Length: 69
Image (tube, rainbow, N blue to C red; front, side, top):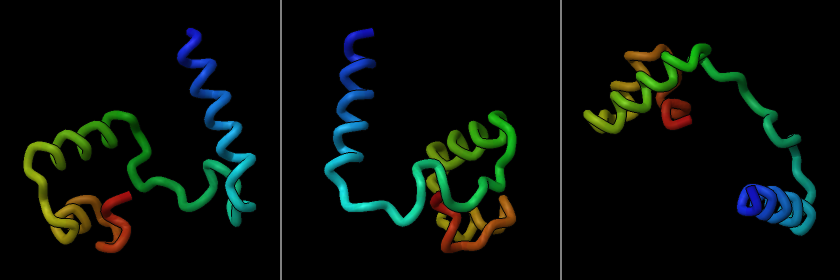
């Protein structure tokens, strides 16, 4: 638990030191993979096969430039 509290304090301190954000933390586009299972499958397939972003974009129906997110 102490290491978790240290991490939270470190994160909050880093936010204060950084320049003002354009977006709030957690903001931005919504994920196209909605379930935890779909996200896990994507991660495991990526680690096993190391596909190119073009293949990931085709398999998951996302833009090639956004496939890494």
